[in-house]
Length: 273
Image 1 (cartoon, one colour):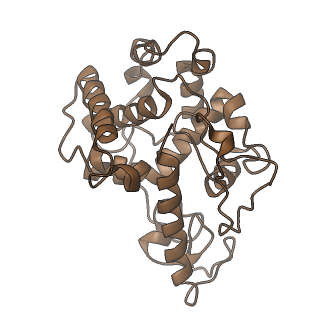
Image 2 (cartoon, one colour; image 1 turned 180 degrees about the vertical axis):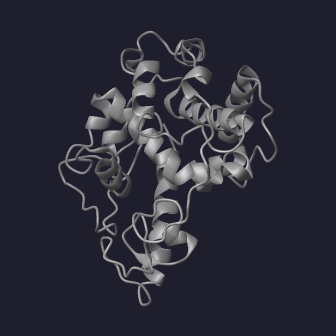
């Protein structure tokens, strides 16, 4: 159903391969770097943006952009949220699972979401997030990926996050978190056992939204200044961008421009990928 999972594999595996290429000049440690080096989100040491930028855990990490005073809750009103989930069939599992309240509770752990740049930037980020969530879940209909249990989402090269052979790492939640190399660090960051209890994402609505916000702030948010098209590439680039699947790109853009209209903000440039 949801094709973004494979592209996540491609993008994350690419990152891992790049890091491995630097292995001879860096130390693969869990934040055991020398004081002048940053520990990246993957536990490697270095001093470039790959190490000191998004996800930097320790050391001279680059300072994040200043957060503005926007209230995300005032933008994501119940009317706005209901306008999305209200389009799902009543029988959808998501109707008894996803809620604005769960989103706002999860948001308490991600204070920078929707609060970087100008007020218009904030509105565009919120529109972008919900556009992708709408597409990934079918208007909050799906909690789990259709036929997900039949698919193998274990990347054995991600040795830092070894798979539990009795568990499945298929898409779950608003962004359809997939693969062991996402469940592992997401669980560590959020506070659940992502590798041994990935089903938590489909059982706890607050944790489910937290995984979406975790993935967004770590993988997608840095692409926002390049336009909505860059966020498509960050989520599902290889399978949708560069002409790979114009229909899904167009669908995401339609949701985004509609939500920008609802939130009273210009969608900006570079909408496709």
